[in-house]
Length: 116
Image (cartoon, rainbow, N blue to C red; front, side):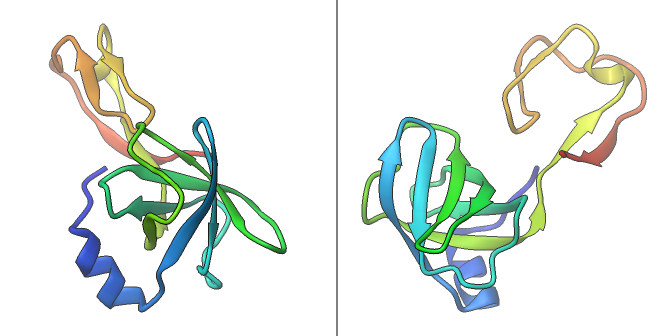
């Protein structure tokens, strides 16, 4: 999934949240009133996450990486998580964002699909 710079989404959606708690890969964020369940979020540290729950006091996200701490700013991306699928990915290892981390893309078609 290709993402733009943090500042682009900050301008585009005019909403910024802040991390209020961190428990491993689960992060609580406050201040994104229009965020949707399943939406992709981007931390100012470059970490990408997905909204997995909406609670009264905070939005709960699963974040990839280790650089998110309390107080870090988070913005909405405006789309749901998508990964590439297809024969070209056979024999490769991908991370939770669908990025190849081991192996090479082979011949064959690839398509982007929404991650449910």
